[in-house]
Length: 258
Image 1 (cartoon, rainbow, N blue to C red):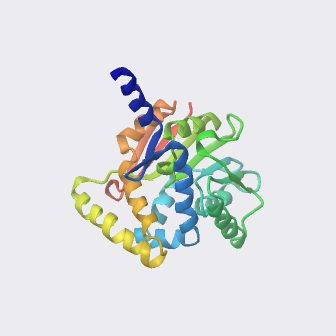
Image 2: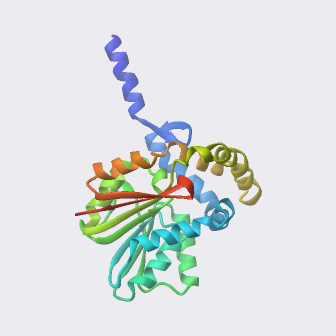
Image 3: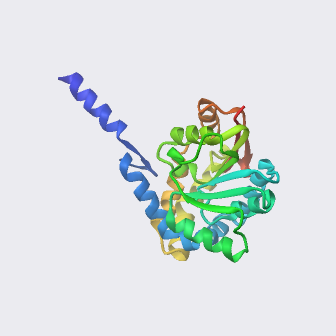
């Protein structure tokens, strides 16, 4: 009897996942995340500028430098949202290359497509609505895969990393730019900003306090630098490393398929 009860409890645990600090059914997380990004899509870049003081542009520039894209390559920009990385990659790959701007959220992709068209980018960029956990691409399709500020929103991160590994070419590079664990000296100020200032900013600018509270919470439950490094290695990536940015508030993880 006790054994059966214990197994039932374990089964319940296995069927839930984090949505910020809240535990929700696994089947419900994608819908909830979609709701967050549906709400903030049209002010996503503005809020990023305000939240980071423009630093997110420097973090993405560093990611672009580390990606070292060459002419003619094929790039997958996962959780690419409004297309800021895809736009840069498109200019680097040139007419002989291909950049796929991919996201699970249709509202974000709509915003990304609009911005790419406004910037005159298009002939070597494709748009795809995909789930990172089960990428609908052939194995060994991409020279480089990036995912910026999106992995923490994925329900099964290990499945997503395995899927990325499968579609990456041998010799290819994968880069994960994500919020991470800051240095201890920064933590009190960072916590105050995250849980007091950020939701208020979301309320005043985007009329959405809840989504930006989720953002702060989702960062806290995301794997830290060493944990994510181990997950990359478990997925098969080699020569893995990470770069702490802004005192560890953000980290760029890099891995290769050898």
